[in-house]
Image 1 (cartoon, rainbow, N blue to C red):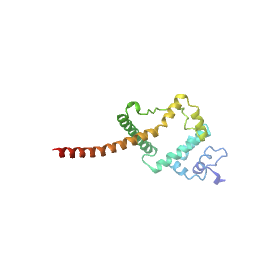
Image 2 (image 1 turned 180 degrees about the horizontal axis):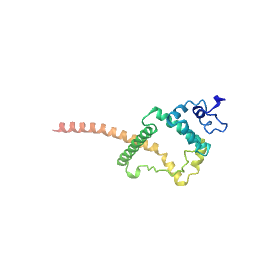
Image 3 (image 1 turned 120 degrees about the vertical axis):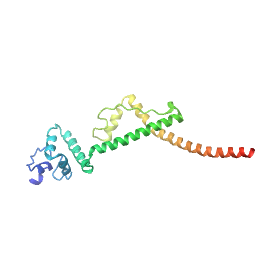
Image 4 (image 1 turned 90 degrees about the vertical axis):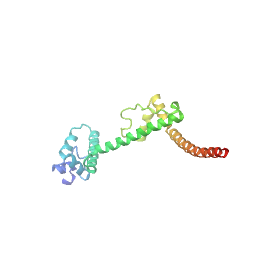
Length: 193
């Protein structure tokens, strides 16, 4: 019977009751619980799970505890915070790249010709709720007309990429033409003198 205890009850050396809140989330063979216990402590894990009302909340909390403990194991100094800072840095770099690309596009094709992408007002649970792609498609069908138009405009990202590649190739062609044009002009000028 001792082998059927959940990982929390095993650490606390308690009997695992049939309705143990920890058992579904931290079974006895859960090797990741060692990290969770080392970072948070079994008593704190039990208290966190006891303070939550629904099984869904407990499952989310258990997953978060596992994730945070693994992050702390990988990076003992920063843990999750280090990962958050890393991804914020990547996001800031991408945003700067987008702004600079938009500015460059405006110089070549004009301000009015640059596609505009807006933040889509989405319901809070739009991408968070678990489910199949069918529920995702249903949510897209339930968007209002403005949201659908904005979503359709996002499909023009391929157009932006094509415009950017055209700009790049035009630049390369201009560099080559400028090099040959000056040489031809210089040759004709020196020949006439």
